Amino acid sequence: MSDDGGAGPLATLRERLAAADERIARQRAVVDGIVDSVRGENVDDEHDPEGATLAWERQQAGALLAEAQAERDAVRAALDRVDAGTYGRCEACGRAIPAARLEARPTATRCVEHTG
Ligand SMILES: [Zn+2]
Image (cartoon, rainbow, N blue to C red; front, side, top):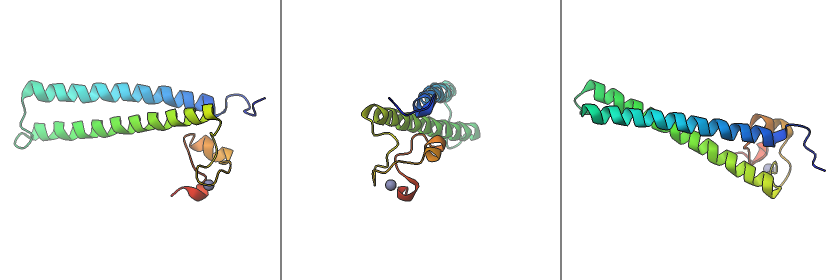
């Protein structure tokens, strides 16, 4: 019935979701660890050079965490589209997104033409 040959985008999306969840858990642990060490040492971000480093690290870890969460949201949205039967269709023109593009970017919501 379905035209997906073998693994297909669903398997890729599920793998990505698991990977994103893992990244989120790891980054959260990193962020928590940095927050704890900042608290533990009661550092002054402005005057303690180590505090500035920690603040920078916390910012980087926070950015990576946000990135992983955005990836998870995008994958979840793609899985919803699979359920709804709209996956792989450009949301701008409604045409099918080429398989090669979906393979490279399984969370793509638009064809190359309509990607801003
Ligand atoms: Zn399009």
